[in-house]
Image 1 (tube, protein in one colour):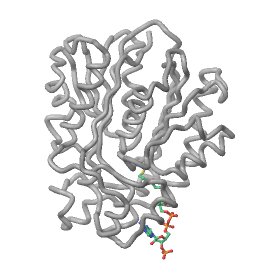
Image 2 (cartoon, protein in one colour):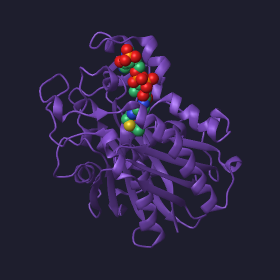
Image 3 (cartoon, helix red, strand yellow):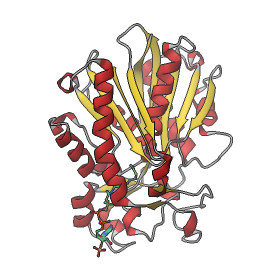
Length: 319
Ligand code: ACO
């Protein structure tokens, strides 16, 4: 059995900060940010929280699926920025959608989180343990960044995306995942959360990133893992309809497409609107292309996530 996507959903805060707004906070410019990253705007929380956005995205996925929430066996939320450590965000989502029979837990693998959660859900389904699983990626990155560090604060946004999987007969999902803890220093975040993005104290608890190290890691490891998954699946690059990659930086995605000698048109992007929402980028993009009518049953999709840890993961499945 494989987990077919029956519904997708997303939720982003209504407050928008464009690059010119960022230039009022740190010494930067719209031109610099667009040229180096492709980002134009990001959505930033006001009263919203990670678990609120996760719940709203999940409600939309459940609604689109037409599945009774009582049939959901498991809820997994990929996040590293929930407003509470416990109860976990997944239990909040369970409550919001009325998944009264589900087991629920959070998974933290930074920007790779959603793809790992999706792979975990597929493993439960293919093993016959569960039939219906809600997988969510949700983040409030604005609570974690140092708003005085122009090297990082311009890169991130907040939001959530969700997919509802239901077991069906079908082509097996093929997956791979890797980690390299030795290189973990490239991207770190202490667990002491700050209260709000305006507060500038406790800088040591904010995210620290070696941008160039992360960039080099991503452009090398993402093509490698895509090729690894293709080989496992006995598939070819040309078979893939869309590569849905973590939306960190347009230049990373362009470099991956170039290394794979694949048309950039097969790499949908929305980072210009939402920036890097960490574990939420892949499900937000999936929801967007789904609701635009770009996806048809039988098409082959490759998901790939990469980020802190270092961690990276990919999977190939039929829509
Ligand atoms: N505005 C203007 N100038 C800036 C800014 C900014 N926002 N940020 C840095 N600069 C300056 C630097 O101070 C530096 O100035 P200097 O030459 O006078 O010292 C100059 O620009 C070049 O800095 P670099 O860090 O070398 O710039 P680079 O081209 O590497 O771009 C960036 C930085 C965009 C962060 C890039 O390294 C990158 O995208 N890395 C990938 C990291 C990433 O996407 N992380 C997301 C989290 S992890 C994940 O999701 C995988």
